[in-house]
Amino acid sequence: MRFKFHKVLLKKRFPLAISRGVRGDSYNLFLSCEKEGIIGWGEAAPGKNENAESVEEIESQLNILMAEGTENKTAQQVNTIAKDRGIAPCATAALDIAIWDWKAKSQALPLHQLLNIPLPSVPTSITIGINPPEVVKERIPLMLEGTTVKALKVKLGAPQGIEADQEMFTQVVESTQNYDIKIRVDANGGWSTSDAIFMMKWLADRGVDYIEQPLEQGKESELKYLYHNRPLPIYIDESCRYAEDVAKWAPYIDGVNMKLMKCGGITEALNIIQAAKRYQLKTMIGCMSESSVAIAAAASISGGIDHIDLDSHYNLNPDPSSGAKMIDGVTTPDLVPGHGGILKPEYYA
Ligand SMILES: [Mg+2]
Image (cartoon, rainbow, N blue to C red; front, top):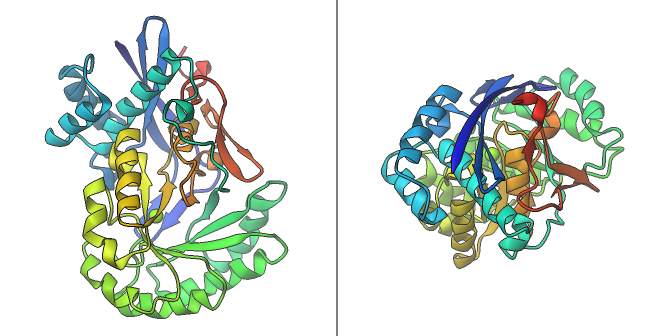
């Protein structure tokens, strides 16, 4: 297999603020792998939490991983080697996504068909970051007008505290009243245990459908205080990276949010889905700052997943890749062989 790297700047429509900081424009690394005239596409979004903060770090880690040889190895074997060598999961994801794309294309099948997974039917959430109420008021119509969006994920856990969260959320409710839209909340670990108990009740009273990552990563032992008599289903995200993490917190959660960049790609995401089923947990699939290549890959395995947050590419202007359009609110992979995502030729030719 011949591999090529392409570094591409992703420009955002709106910067995204969460409890830990703000994310604006960023570079992603695209990976093409070519063999027998077939090209597979992968993508990596660097991130502090993902153990590789730049495209250059991802590239050097991928060179280490690929030096181990990928030919004649299964995707699971490549993932196991990557974990043993401490390769950043977002780097592994680029390779894993490209290999699955190549594999499906070599059999002339859409990836979801190769994996025997139905097409997704659950609408994606789109995300509004932490913002003052006046910004929320201005932004929500820009995000929703003229779209088929059916769900909004609201980032709370503001560093200014839960009063700021309540002010922002109240504005979200007011600004969305003329839209038929579900609202869910992600605190990104921004709350103390007592804030979380209070806010879960407060948000349940206002019709929110679930809460994600109420407590900081590392504080999982306190989830039991939220779980008993919980007014909302609890999902974890930062607290669950790999399939083996599912078992650890299963007694105190309702579901897990997997992301290709966080876990190392499609192979491990499929393991997480299996683990979640084993513990009778719900599933969610989300994303980092990704374009349509990584989103199409995630969308290809999203049929059967309970909640979907595959929306980062809708916030790009422009999206350097294609392959994951919104169809009646659902992020749907293009129905072509592979995962459907490609980097547009003007970004690498
Ligand atoms: Mg999250």
